[in-house]
Image (cartoon, rainbow, N blue to C red):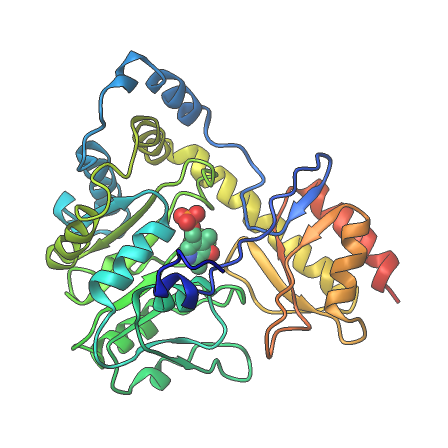
Length: 359
Ligand SMILES: *Cc1c(COP(=O)(O)O)cnc(C)c1O
């Protein structure tokens, strides 16, 4: 605490990211990073961008990247997505931050699930947004009907984090049908691991904004690139915030790497398939050890053991150099969130858990 702080800083409770340990030789299954490297084409593009041109500012609008993304999602979602419907930022956390300030701050409360991405209440604190949390049902699922109440906006990840549970597009369309007067944001950080993107709904619902990241399915957490797709009026609101904050959020290296990531579809599909296959093996292995595992459509699983305390298990795993995520929060304090690693990493985890918790 300091007398020099603004009154806002005194009120903040910042987000606590998963640990990035400095130790080598760890099995790191705590922050949902992709276990596979980025596409070789991405690395070549990044190397190529490390040139004398770095003395020049990048394109403030990242136009070529937005064109690449618009063409990509036009193909993938069977719709016509224009570059004016695409916003890019320095990570999806930044895109989300601008979204909260630009589109989700209203007199009525913002709605999001009681168990969800823990950055949402942090942005509400930063921007002075009132919110109400809506309880997941007894199976830890989002019931869209529960959001039929006066609101200044709705946001949730799909699949949700940290549960991994997926909503189908019919349920999202039903929510949009009954909620026309405020913005609905779907945070699709994990959608490529088994879900259908709501981008195919943006031309039908002018109040839908879909946010994605290159950090998880495209193995680029270290590059910091996120994006949003929606009606041009929603994108214009994000641009007004962006251009009042940082005109050049994406550097030349990030733009080159991100464009290459959308151009190497074969590699992307190959690593997504590998993660999904390992997730299914990991789920079965955990179940054989007596764990209850929520059905996951993400690159992590959320599991609890009926006889073993989650915090103790996390601590014992750490002693064996395996790191998973444990949240000391109501309803989920007996769960562990385990990122899907390589097959070898997941086998090592299962072997250690068999010693700690096996029958
Ligand atoms: C990982 C994650 C993000 C943030 O992704 P970055 O682009 O790396 O900032 C956003 N939302 C959810 C739900 C996430 O899990």
